[in-house]
Structures are given as C-alpha cells and as structure tokens.
Image (tube, rainbow, N blue to C red; front, side, top):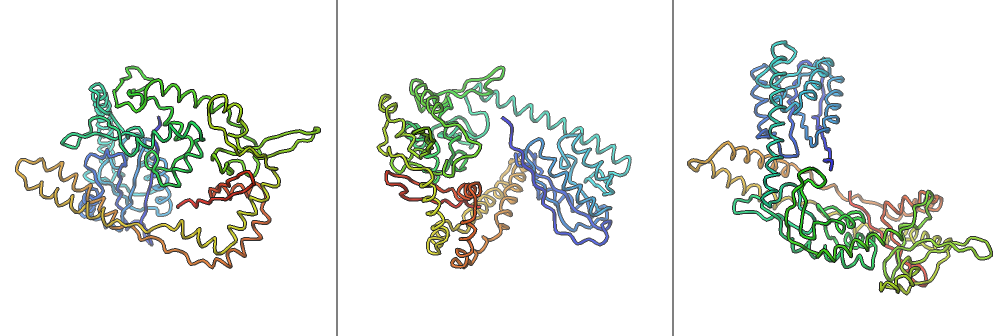
Length: 490
C-alpha cells in the first residue's frame, strides 16, 4: 500500500529591498517521527548560533513539514520560487539531513538554489558556494542517506521479529481493535476495542437488510467516528466486512515472500465470514450500472420505509418508454421473499418527471425560506475549538519530564529530545488561531437573491448542489415524505 504523500512549506512574510542582506533559517520536520532528535526548536537554536558566527542576521524562518518519499516536489518548488523572487537571499539549514534524506534530492535542491543565485549555508559546514564546503556537504549528505537506509532496514527487521513473536508490528490496528501495551507503554498485541466492536457487529447485522450507503449516512448523522476517525462511506464499510482479520488471524506482509500469520482475538467465526462474503458478492450483482447522464435524483433518494436506495425503472407500454422511481428492495420482493430476506412494503412506482419536480421544489423551498435557512445554519454551526485541556496535559507532561532530568543515572539525551517534541506540540496549541466569527448573513435578502438562480439551473448544476449539501429525499407510498440536508464542515 502506498503511503500518503504530504508536504507543506510555510514561508514568513517578507518585505525585502536588498535580498543579499537577508537570511532565512530553514527548518525541516518529518511527520513520520523519524527525525532522530532534530526537533524544530533545536534546529532554530542551532541556526541562530551558527548565523551569529557567520555574521548573518536571521529575519525569519521557513517551516517545512514533509511525509512520504516523494513529498519533496512540493517543498522544492517553494524554495525555487523564493530564490527567483529574491536573488542573493541567504538560506541556512541546521544539518545536511534537514536539507533532505536522499543525496540526489538534497544535492539537486542546493544546486538549483545556487543556480538561482541564492546563498546556501549549512551549520558546521558554511557557505556551500565554496569548493571545500561543497565537498564536505556531499560527504555528509551521503552519510545521512546511508544512516537513513540502515535505520529503515533495522526498523523492517524489528517489525518482522515482533510479528514472528505474535506482536503487532506496525501502524494503526484494524477497525474494532486497539493496541495492548505493557507496563512501559510499549505496544504488544491487539485486543478488542469495546466501543468499536459494537459498531463492527452493527455493520454485519444491518448489511443483511440495508445498503452500505444508507448505513454510512446513519453512522455519520449519529456522529459515530469511522476508521481513523474519518467520516463513514460505503467503501469503508465493504472493506471492513471483507477483511479476513476478524476470523482471528492477521497476515503481515500479505502476498509477499515470508508472510507471517499473527493471531488476534476473533470477532466472527469462519462460517459467519463465508456467509458474509456470499452476501457481499450477491449484493454486487444487483448494483445498477452507472449512467453517463444520471437521472436527477439518482443517489439522493431513498425509501422512507427500509432506507434502501430508490432506483429508476423502465417500462414500455404500447412501445413507449416510461420511467419511474421505485424502492430497490420492494422491486426485488419475490427474490427477497424466496431467500428469506426482508421484503419492503413500499412497492409503489412514482412517475420520474413528477417526483423530480416535487423533490426539487421542496429543496428550493427549504433553501429560500429564511426561517428554514436559519435552522440549517444553527444546526451546523461549528463550535469553537478549545485546546485548554490539551495545553494543560502538555504542561503537566513537561513538568514530569523536567523532573526526570534530575534523577541520577537517567539518559538525559533521550529525555531532552522528548522535552523538545512536547514543547513543539505545546507551542502549536498555544499559537492556534481563534475560530472565525460566524458571518452575519441577511437571510431574507440571501433567499431572495438565491431564488432566480435555483429556478434557472440545469440538471447537472442541480445534482452538483445536491451532492455538495448531501441532500437525501425520503419517499413513501404517497410520494415525498421529507428531505435531509447535511452541510459538510470545512
């Protein structure tokens, strides 16, 4: 599985008349926790000390955060843009490893910056435009990559050894489990997570009579966190239900040579798992094909009785095609009854054109009624973030770490690195910007301005709006029963 690539380059605000008299410190932190003690605070301290020795004046810092082997592309472009705008600007890095972990990438970055007439410095090496310093940088950059490759090899071997002993080797555990730790706080193996185990069994039970999309929508409306605390969707539910780990075995390095089976607590029997896979396979057979030009309500209309999807059905009386919306569960009534599954009583067919007109009119009314708009804003108003508890926790953690430095025989280097990391986290929490004020919107005027736009929109624009607002129409035998709007949070 490919790792997510993330990169961010935060540049200070600059007002530069003579770039040659300006020096920016360049800090680089990996979000993967592989910085071997190179926290941002330490880099800033080392850069300031070296700048004073070199006769340079720091006016600001460039904060670079990367994760993933290819994330350098984004940050390198930011450096190049800076050097092109301000020829002659001084850039100073704390260490060759803070330029980059791989020789070809770090050397390529520095060479390009020098070509753009930037002046690049590295602490304890000096100005890289000088031949002797350049040779020292190349040698140090090579050593950094060798050390990094050795570290990666050791980490992989350590994970394999842990897997052979039956421990959990890496990463987040599968949904429904949590890490069990020893007395030192080191992760050992997996145990069921009581809260999420209940959700897993709920997925199994509800999928027997309801679609994955409907289940995902309900879980999101109830505020139940999904895998990695992200919102639920139908693919996430199917991935969980297809995962064989819940039978009691996790295979480390699945599909690769020397794969290792790790026992975990079983949440489902092999017979139940096989039955679930048959249900998943059968459900796929009934999925309608995607249309190039879908109908207005496809994907946004559900049955008010069983909350299964409502699909378009075609009939041809007297050779003339006629289209209707109907509950997919009710339209398979005989097949469901023969298989012992739930048969929905909402078996009425609704004329497609008339139902689309009624649903769109109901949505327009909801979006142009000031009172209903006010309710919508209130329901989805975002509570301001409050970091008070997290700040207090970090401050208490620092007090404990400072106390460890006074204990005889304590390895202070590891404690100091931990202190720097906690200080960085505390600084981020303390510097978090306040929540944006809620805009004061004249809802009456807004509704009046919106009406003509909604009246003139075509089908494609209407579908985009319904998708953005996550609109769901609930249909019973009489027609439209209600609609729901879920405004996504920023």
